[in-house]
Length: 373
Ligand code: IPM
Ligand code: MN
Image (spheres, rainbow, N blue to C red):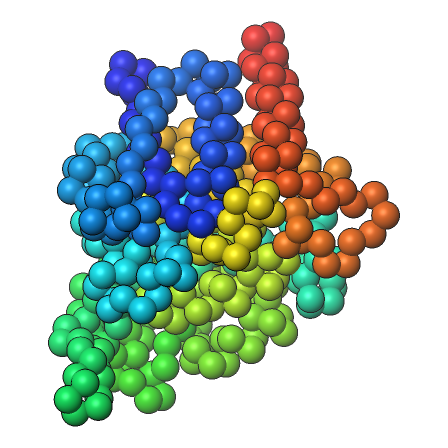
């Protein structure tokens, strides 16, 4: 961001728990703007089920236009049980896939981090998750999600989707993975199913070729089934994992187990005209509106927005430190109630957001005082 122009953030809260967790993420962004004197401009539009109901489309034109004009898009979640009978192209999820495609970001970054304070909240043993810090780079614009032809042919009682990647599509997402690994522990694991699928053979050959450009980075390959197991056995052994769209969707939900809850996971999609930020969790209609949702995934997503779109690394770190602090203080939303010990306090979505914001204000206050001397 530059000092002279406002930084435009489009909020697409969406369905289910989307609005309540996004509200808390926006509060964190507002605090950052207040303390830093940044000119963040917020606009809000409809997407998903709420957009179908009010405007007849899961991605109304006004939403897409506003997204393309913004500097970053922060999305909550889409989907709801009442739409489950609709064909895929009419569902709320179609709006999400369409906006991903329109914004053009192809590298979906999904960090999965074992917060020390949550070691007892994972169903895995604390010594298994301790120190795990994984960054998934999920290819987001290709594979089965977008491949043509696709059809459910009722007349022949058969259905098909197409798994297709070009070398260029694999190479560009591989480069993102290697670049990010160079700033981390310098290891990339590429995940495929090259023992069965031609697409995976292309994937593996391309990632291996791109690796030549990054002599300082160690590359290994795993089959997706084996990776699913290693993730639970030895999550500490992974640094950056790069994989195709559907494998990345599945493995990143699995990796939530390391963190203790899907509600903890943030994501950011980079590489397009406008970057798109969305927590990994879905709309969770069963708990929507009850104050049970965990806003930390959305709040950490706001931190990723500051890091990758606004160039505000210190502020991103301040939000992450605030989350760490409230977890250490013992605050937990209901999804993190497993293994609760004395000193643990179960709080609502809003209370959790307030705790983070309070901690964030202290952290920003302190860093401002330091800069003033
Ligand atoms: C995700 C979600 C989406 C996906 C759905 C809602 C279309 O599961 O972001 O992981 O499959 O990409
Ligand atoms: Mn998913």
